[in-house]
Length: 288
Length: 217
Image 1: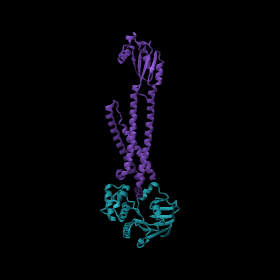
Image 2: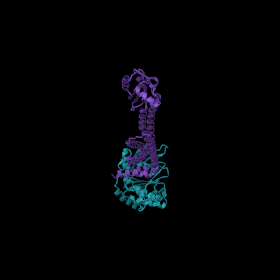
Image 3: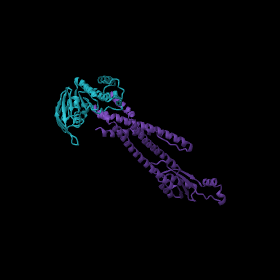
Image 4: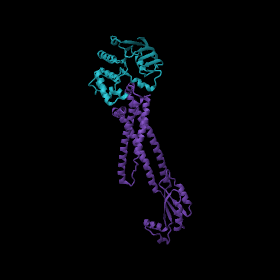
């Protein structure tokens, strides 16, 4: 027990003894974890943003002039059955006339004696998809329905947004992976420097009959404590940044940044695991 | 207690020890002399098994270089007190912490450690300097601190590698007297030195090595 307390105390004291290298390591971990955290928050909210964008995707379906309101109801039911369609809103000939009148101020029936506007339908697509939303098959299926005259949509814009989203997700994962690798290397190298600057201590401990485990533990503890300190600072920064950003966003839009704060637990876990891996790897090169 | 049987060791550069053969009995005080580069430090490194002989065998008490397992080397070293010319005191720890280190390695309780350290510091004449850091101590005090760190675990053997190398004659003489006192309590002492004038007046066996070979014993 006394030996364990001594080693624990040494790990803590080493943080003060090796101030400069500790500062470097904590700062590196802080930067890396903050970047990983920002990427994670971005990934979560990109998802939310793309879902918001998808609510704005609209397909306008115009039926042939001969199609009556009753026939259109049946065609709309067919449209609703198409995979990927979320809602449909039927606009009858009468409703179309009202809309025209409200927008242009003229009543067409006064000039023409009949209502020339066709029955139409606004189609909204589903918001939640696992990945890339392809709108073309939905358009093709709608066009195949009898009575459909023309289909207006923002296909090109939608495919650009969707492909940007897909590439963004892939890029974020790649960057996060690269940052984790770099963090492991930084921690390992910082600890290597710490160990190198303590070669006298290692030599003295060896001469005094210390086992390799006894020599290793304070260095590994030091690495883990550095990682925890870096994770605390990164968590504080991320929390503050999200809070501040939401304060600003609330004045500009209804969109807010949502974060599952459980991910901070993962951030701590990542920090501890990579510091354990990094410090063990570094010290094993010096103690064989 | 210490036995070297036809021990040879060669560094990559091609220099080391050749066919060293001698014995040191329990409780003996032996000087190992020879010029700088003659192989004294190599011999001491072989004794605390930092390196292993290419041929021959080194025996220290119940441990021998042929059969010792890697995990038993720390156990062997706990029976040996090592003093070197370079002190190896830790700059970021005060005198008390430096001297207490071997007891932490062994696993003594905190309460025992405080008592034992005070006792040993008194023995080597460093009482009152517990809070001083190595840079605040003189060369002689640093070497006595090393001695305190070597004897605090009550070792069976003390290996001293040129302990007087950086000390003036008076301080060197005081250090040898301290080692003799420790030896008088039963601890075997092997002290390496290249300073023949310092040791010739002491009444102890002298083992001389030259160019890695035993010249006299």
